[in-house]
Length: 169
Image (cartoon, rainbow, N blue to C red; front, side, top):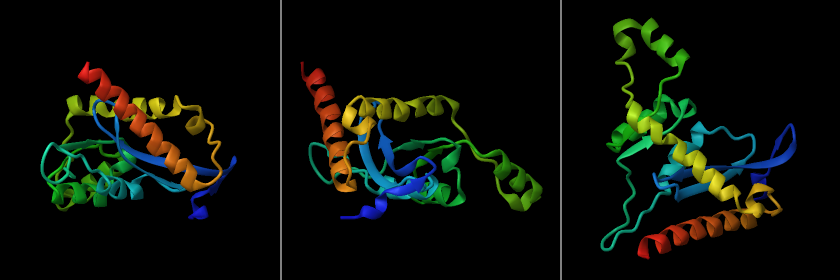
């Protein structure tokens, strides 16, 4: 058991859920970290956990595009997406743009940004609200990280099953 997942913050011991979701507000992958852990370093780890099974063959592990907020606008995250041919729909931070412009022609090209795809970023926020609709997750009753993560997986499965039964009928 990894009890180190309960980090310290101003409010006491906490943990943070990093989640990847699809456009239909269904979870694809998530990890649990200490409460004080930053979002950006967990980006690649969450992406590596995505597995979408199809009717035949290997599970799909590479999405067509990834939408995220400015917290994920690091050079490392962008280069990882570029290496895997995944479209990054992440706006550039103001300070990153200023540093790039300050370097002149050696600073590289401006970050492209698809405003239409970026509008779908709120699906992750709605997914988190769906997850928190289950009181055990919203209030964090589980004391161990293992049982909390199990609750996240259970709630995620419930969301998928509910949507799949709606499609089948």
